Length: 198
Length: 177
Image (cartoon, rainbow over all chains, first blue to last red; front, side, top):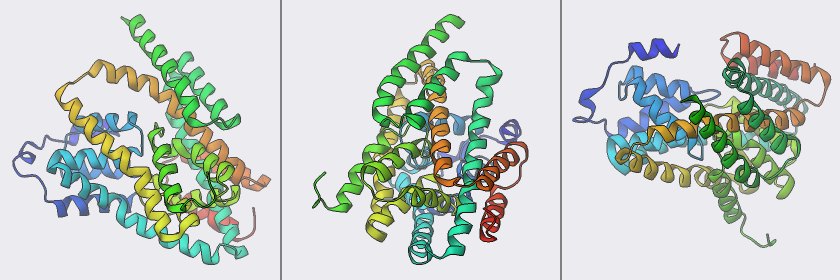
């Protein structure tokens, strides 16, 4: 599917001359966010690359890769970086507010309902069913991300993955301490592999 | 942690700190959110945490909004807003400066190594999230089976996940889990 999107995209050369207004940015991100069930990335790509043509597929991938390896929620970072690229700091803030404001409002309303009615048996049972499925969905995302490592039989990558899983999931160690060990280790492995490949 | 600390400040510092270590996005940070909210601060129970995750998946928007639900359970509407801003604000500012800096000095080779290094890490973190949430959610055998079926269906079809979530809600409502 990524290829199809890439070939359908055309560069938006006129964006630099005539960037979208702050209001347009706010509403565009609010719309992506509100249509994004179980993650906004797919909708963000569709809106930014295909619908508005604010970025080419390559630019989008590059920006997202940057936001993916910076800390914090990826899609929020993307909104800030993207908005700022088009309209400076104000643009970043408009995209940030559009992405987070409306769904925050919704989720707070849900939290209030849960606070009032969360103890009712029927509702508790329904929510328990939803959370069983939500865990299954998350597991499927993990499988999907893992499959390239399995296909390449990337033993070192899989070992790092397993070590992190054991340290965080089973031993329940604090994230900061695990990352202090795992990030340098994983970087060394990746660097060595790159040297080898040449 | 002193008892008379303002909960709003506690929320802010807790989430701002966690966000700086949230490599691989919000879902990868779930084990740490769980550790802090359930085991360290005792803001919520294991079950409430699983419910918060379920609610955050039921509502549209970025997955990071689970922190709004944690914040709400600590300090109401203000807690929800503060938790969200603390979890998203500092790292968004950091991203802004890094992207500006990278626009001047492109180091494509390093970004390749970084990515190769961080992908296995974030998969491991997400697998740990699934494990911890599974322990909190799948308290019965039918529940566990439902999780496995949902994982298989989501892996093998392109069915909109909302249908699966709704089906889970109906099964639970019917008292089958």
